[in-house]
Length: 225
Image (cartoon, rainbow, N blue to C red; front, side, top):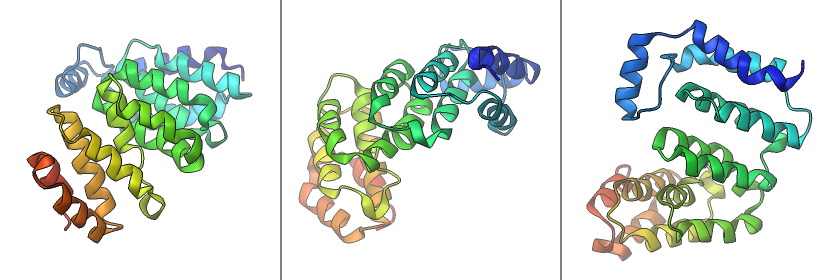
C-alpha cells in the first residue's frame, strides 16, 4: 500500500478511538497545550501495528518522509506513533537519520517525547556507531538546547555492559553544575541504571564528585547501591 495515506489513516484511527474526558486528563498530566485524542497506549498499539504493516517505508527517504508526516500531526498521540513507527524499522535507525531525531528532540521539548527518542532511537545509533556519534553527543552535551543535553546523558540508558563508562561519567560531570531539574534528574537516572551493571564504579564516581552533584542526582544514582 502506498505510504501517502499513512498520516490520514493514523488520524482517522485515533479519531475513532477518541475520548474527550481522557484527552483532558492526559493533557493536564503532561502539562501541555497540545491537544490529545484521548487514546491510551494499549489502544494506540493496534493502530501502530497496522500502520507499520500497511505503510512500510520503501527506502531510507520514505522512512524519513513517513516519520515526519506522522510527527507533523497536531495531536500528541500522532507524535507518539511517529516515534513508535521510527523505532519499528531497525534497518533505518542509523546515523543517516540523526538529524531527523535531533529535529524531533528539539521540537518535542518535553520528557514524554524526548526520552523515548533519546533511549530508543539515538541510543541505538550510539550503540552501533559510537565513533561517529561521540563528537555529535559532545556538542549536544555542551550545547544550548536543554533537551539535547538530556538526550546526550540518557542515550546509553539501555546499553548495560556496552555502556561507554568514560563518556557517561564525563557527560554527567560536565553537567553537574546545572540547576535545571530535567538535567539533574537525567544524571541520577543514567547513573542509577548503570549501577545495575557496575555498582562499584558508580559508587566511586559519586564519592569522587561529592557535593558537585546535586542532591537529586545523588539520591537517584544511589537508589540501588
